[in-house]
Image (cartoon, rainbow, N blue to C red; front, side, top):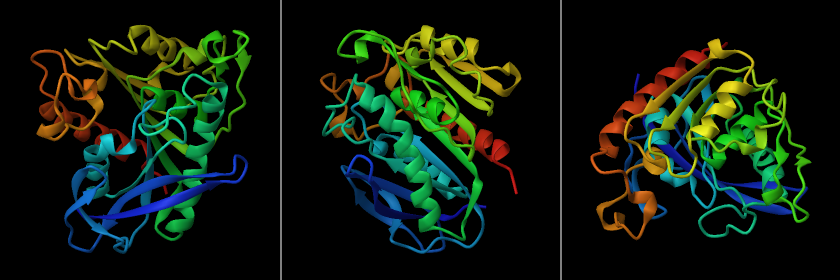
Amino acid sequence: MEHFVGYRELQVTDPELNLTFPLRVLYPSPTPSRAESVGPYTLDVAREAPISPGGFRLVLVSHGTGGSGLVYRNLAHHLARHGFVVGLPEHPHNNRDDDSWAHTPQNLRARPRHLQLCIDALLQQFPSSLKPSAVGLIGHSMGGYTALALAGGQPTATPRDTPDWQNRPIPVPHDERVKALVLLAPATPWFMAEGALRAVRVPILLMEAEKDEHTTHFHTQVVLNGVPDQQRLTHRVVPNAGHFAFLSPFPAARVSAAFPPSQDPPGFDRLQFHEEMNAEVLAFLTQELDVD
């Protein structure tokens, strides 16, 4: 069953760090949608519409370093049309407008915590419409780190992340409500310590870009070697794809060699790939989050 897509913009508060950050939400709605400006993009949504009746599964999308949740807007919209509530947080101080926490232990600590706060916020926003034990996480690049950490990973800051160039354990929350992960070209060097991913026992769909210039096969191998149950991991390499292949296709006016996220290796069709990826992610999450 397909739905119209509702849209809301929330503010999530982190009292520990005394900050708030935006959380965009797409969800099934009975209200007919129309083309609306959402940030710099256009989406077919119904602003502030009621949510459809039913018990829906919750998915959060964690963006890459210096990124934005809206660059995964088409995947989020596709999932919402098919019965998911999808949250797109903007990670504080690690987004396109403010990347001041990049390569810091603070960022490694805060990102998983902020996903957990988003889960709490959305369960409060839709208290009778969500299945609290059916949460999925989608993470691209640094978002892959974030998803693995909240699902049970034990990260260690690398020398690059610390002022004194020492490895240091990073305390992060783990959330048992998370039941499935979709990792898109994940960044993983913080999970190289022995046993760092031993507690990650949820099903994983892991997509690797064949021509990734940022998170190479080494990053994928950390996951493949680290999770305890290979039977719960589906891994595939996307032929001819670069690191940014997982971002929604950009409007023509933004496609330029001067804007690397809009670029792909010669011959790669991002639009066609996203039709395949959206269907694959939907099928995976529908199966793995099929809980009562």
